[in-house]
Structures are given as structure tokens and as C-alpha cells.
Image (cartoon, rainbow, N blue to C red; front, top):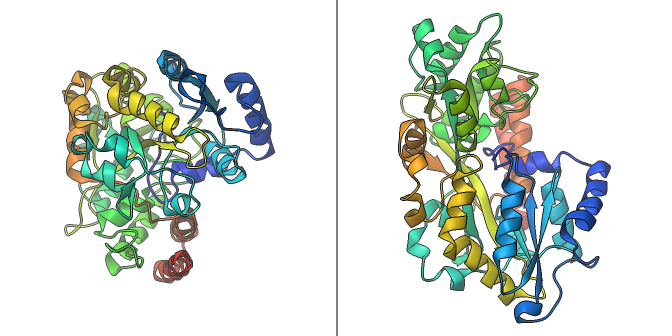
Length: 429
């Protein structure tokens, strides 16, 4: 699903927040009236049993059939009426406004951060997860846990990696890259008059900020989440290599679609592309066996390969008038209904079902590049830290722009971002 969460640095939430504006507000009003039938005050109506009305919000997924699927699941639930809100554009901004104003939904998809917990916008869901907690990966629980409480039920896992055309690498006499230096070399070798070597976004590869840091052994925060952990000599060197990649003239810029859409890869505008597992069916349909996937390469021989594990998680609004009913619906749909979870993960693009027992039955992910992607996700997957706030992400993103696109001194920019993150940590207490 093209709108799944991208890699850290500039993540999808931040990108969503950066789009929309007044047009988005107008679309929001239209969507509320046209799609959901929700009350002007927001949230569902009070009541119990079948008299309860719940409001459930999704961002607009890119793949055909996803909205119809969401409506089908909601209609199948018999314990409450569920109105589905389906929002294009700045979903993150709309959700944030709705939750802050008290006009938010009862149930919504998003990604957790500590500010949501402190604002009491999300309800702990430990009780509905108690019997199945062992059926989720450590990463999926970790990214939704703060101070020992699990606040969300993972809906889909979206590993992101580099896709490459096998025949083009063979023609150039190159092997899939295993280090960032090799990535630059291969990208340059694959660049021709008609095709660029690599597409990592029209912003010049800002999505590589987080994975570049991980590839150098860094992390956003220390293990105790008390201090920044991205300001090291190794990570600074990795960021400088991303500047070298940007300057290599082998990156595709100005593509008709951005990195989360397979259009550039399938139109032969780039020989390699950073994108999620969701795009694999469309890429398979175009290239059949002529493609492979690899993790983001190691920063150097001492680094590590990285797969960014994006995805979406279902939450219950802690200020809902129907918390128990909302939790019951989330449990029914995203924990109990294996048929719908499989449908959501495999019928509209590929995703990994978060429940291990469901993923084990996902035959479409058990061969070829899809199986490789799952293997890399298991071995190299990194997830969002819920203690990393949007304000910290903005400081990190500014740092990447200043280093990679503006060519500023990397060490100075890293130090500036570090100080901003330290200030935010101090403010968070």
C-alpha cells in the first residue's frame, strides 16, 4: 500500500503533515460528511451493545480495493455500527487536530509517540492483547510500548528495501551493493542517458537518513531513551557518504511519482529504487523474475545492513465515549479475524501480517523476492522508537537536508541536531 510509513528521517507522517493546507481542511470536511456520516462533535455516539456507533479513521491507501475492504470489515461487525473515515492528503494533521480538539475518532490508525501518551490520546490495550502477546514480534511490541504499557495493535508490517533489475546489473557487470560505497559505484555504473541508477525520492534521498544512521551502528536515542545516539563519527561519515551519493548524478530526481510508488522503477526511469514490500505485486507484474531486493547497505565493513520496518498500528482514542466498545472492535478485527488480516496484508499489495501465526500461512510471501524480503526483515529490521518525537524528527530531517542537499559541514550539522534533540528530551522530562 503506497501510503505506508516510510523510513525515519523524513517519515511518512512528517510528509503527510507537510502536505494539504487549506485544501486538506476542505477535503476533511467533505470526507466527514460524505464518507462517514459521523456527528459534527466527532467520536461515536454513546450507548451500549448494538446501539453504539464507532468512528474509525484510515489514511487513504494507494491500492485499488482497500477502501472497499475497510468498509466490508466494518459492515461485518455486529456489536456496533462502525463508520469508516477515509482521508486523502494530510491524514496526520487531520488526526492530530481531531484528537486535540476532542473531535477525533474512536478508533484510528497511526504510529505511536510519547507525546500521544502524555496527552492521553491513546488507551492502553494490554488487556485485549494478553492472550496473544507472544504471537507478535518483539519489534512490533517495542514500537507500541511506553513505560510497560502496549498502546496499539499492529495492523501491517511494511519492510522497505532496495529493489534492483537483475538484467541491468548483469549488463553492467555489477553485483548488488553491500556497502554505501558500492551503492554509489553501482548507481553510477547503471546510469545511462535514459535511466538513472537509483531512485530514493524526489527530495534526493532524504528517506535514507534513518537507515544511513542505522547502517553505521547508530540509533536515534540511547537504550534508556535519555540521550541522542546518532551523533557519532561513524554516523557522521555515513551522512557524508549520502552527500556523495547525492552529488554522483546517478540519483533520479523529478520523477512523476515519488519513492513509495513503483512508477519510476516500472517505467525504467531508474535501475534501482528504495520502496516497500507493498509494491512487489506491481513490480512482479511488470518485470516477472527480472528483479531482486536487498537491504540498505552497510555504511562500511564495520556497519550493518538495514531494513526499515514501516507499517500501521490501530489505536483506541482514550477520550472516546465508547472505550470498551472500541477496544472490542479492535480486538475483533485486528486480533481475532485472521481472514480479514490476511486479506488486508496480501490482497492489495504485499505486507507482512503482524501475527506470527497468520504470517506463517501467507503463501504469497514464501517464495522468490517476497521470501527474501521477509528474511531481510527478520534479520535486519529496525522500527520506530516511540520516544522519538516529531520535533526530534524535524531536527534530524533539517540536519539531513543541510548535509546532503546543501553540502554543509556534517559534523557541525550533527552537533546542532544533537543539541535540539537534547532540548526536546529535557522538555519531555
